[in-house]
Image 1 (cartoon, rainbow, N blue to C red):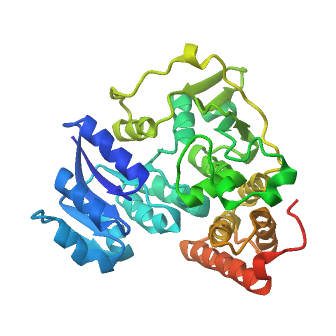
Image 2: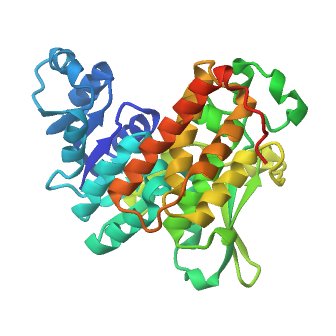
Length: 394
């Protein structure tokens, strides 16, 4: 039985991870759960799975959690340090990192220092500190298993193959909510239209990232570190049906693709059960009902954030951390009606141009770059009411 710690248990990935655990009773034991603010849902999960330790990032909600535990008495850790301590808990086989944003970096490094198997559902860890994280994993014998559906697909297609055999990997994307919207209409879009994803209901930040294609830009950086390939070997392909989760092309021209119904429980379960596979109650993929699968190249003129992602990936050092942090700040400003949607890539490009990347950065240099980028966006917004910035991102 594998003993698991789940960081971010009240988010969508965490909830689906617990569904997988429930479906495979006897395969997994939940020994630790961590949440941000949802004391109510965390308490419900504790009553169901009886973990020995829980962590609540929002220390101010401790009393609410205790009140809702209804007799269950796990050890309670509090704050960011408590979450990091849980990630390094002794007697654990696997840690699922489903915390969003830069807050996942320190807990992931704690789990790596213990040599754990880590199911990584967080983009920012490898975007911000890919070189450092991969190096530390190698030094400590830790294993990084991707949970993101596209990277899990690539991981599975690469199994049993040498990287010398790989010509390129093809990261698929549905195209987001604006795939069919002409670029000239972007300036007239309402927030509701930007947030109206045709396939999925997601959190506001990831939905905006899907609209700008920044989510795929970050995945390019993530893939570079996960798989040890050059940036030139990573391509993005738009696939609206979202059935082919990604592909690998080999040097002999063969292409292996991973196809499955769209459900995050599939990559989560594979990361939990690796190197084995477990059965699933999910419906089988019906190719006949699908009738056709379509693919197209992304429109770089409509989605300049994709180009910025490739720039950061090639430059390396602290530039990816700056891109990630500046994007977080820009998306937050857009959601608060402080930045027009069309100005997100413009402001991102300006921040990247102002940064002097540090090569092979330490953890502190990465965190400094993250803070610097947030401050640059804040300053730009203060100096430009409604952020009507002159130049367009190229």
